Length: 340
Image 1 (cartoon, rainbow, N blue to C red):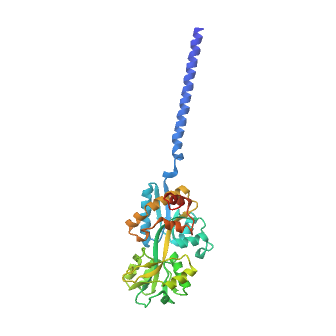
Image 2: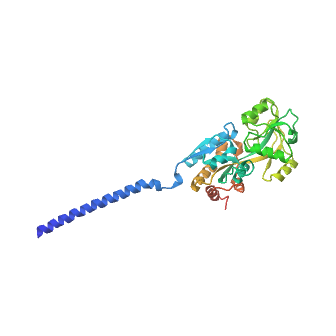
Image 3: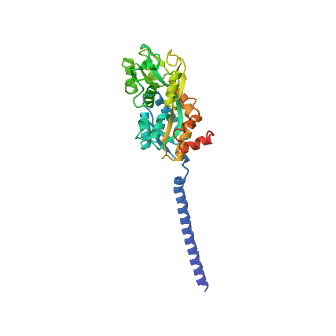
C-alpha cells in the first residue's frame, strides 16, 4: 500500500512537471508571437514614407527650392524620404491623379481648373486632387525689350511674344488676360531655354514669367545680360476689365528696380501649392503637411528663394475655397489654430 502511494505520488509529480513544461512552452510561444507581431501593430506615426514629388523644370528657379524643402522636410519628420521628379507643372495634376507620383506642385488657379475639369483640363478632370498647403506667392512678370517702344500691354498687339514656358499655368493665364483686353499676339512656343534664347537673338519682343517673389529671377537676368530689357504692367482699368471676366485673378505692385532700372508696375500674382490625391491616408498627409510647413521658411532662407518667404497659413485656408483640403492637412491646420 505504501509503495503504491509512493508510486502514485511519483506519477502525479511527473505529470505535474510535464504540465508545467507544456505551460511554459505555450507561454514562451505567446510571448514570442507578441514580440514578432508588435512592430506590425505599432503606431503609423513613425513609419517610413518614401514619396515622389512632381516638381518643375530643372531650369526653373523653384527647382532648387523644392530640393531643399524636400530634404529639410524629411529631416524634420525623421522618417520621410522625398524624391523630386522633374515635370511640367501643368502635367502634375494628372500625374498625381493616376498615381505616378505621391504629391505635386501646381499654380492654384491651374489646380482649381484641373479639379473642376474646366479650361485646358476640360475632359481631363482630376477630381481627386486635395490641397496640402500654399508654398509661394509670386508676381507674374511681363518682360520686354526696352528698345522696341513698348510701354504698355496694348503695345504688344501683333508682336511675337512668349506668354511663358509652353504648358505652364502662367502661359494660359497671360493669354486669358490678353484676350480679356482684346490683345492678340503672335505666340512663340518653347521651353524656358528656347524663350530666353529667342529674346536674346531678337526673335521675340518679350515673355511672361513668374518672378522670384517680386523681383526678377535668373532667366530674366540672363536675358538682360544680352539685350536691353524692362517690365511692363497693367493699368487700373486693365485690371478692372480682366477681373470682370476672371474675378479670381489677383494683382500686386512690383516695386521699381525689380529688373534693373524698371519702373514700378502692377502685375498679376500666382499662389502655388503642394497637393496630393484623396487616396493618400489621413495620417500620411498630416505628417507630410506638418513637416513641409515646419520647414517652409528655413528652406526659403537656405535656398534664397524669396517667393516662399513670409507665407502665412491663412493663404492655405483661402486656397481651400477653390480646391478642398486633404483631411490630413485639415487636421494639421486645425491643430495650429487657423481652422475651427
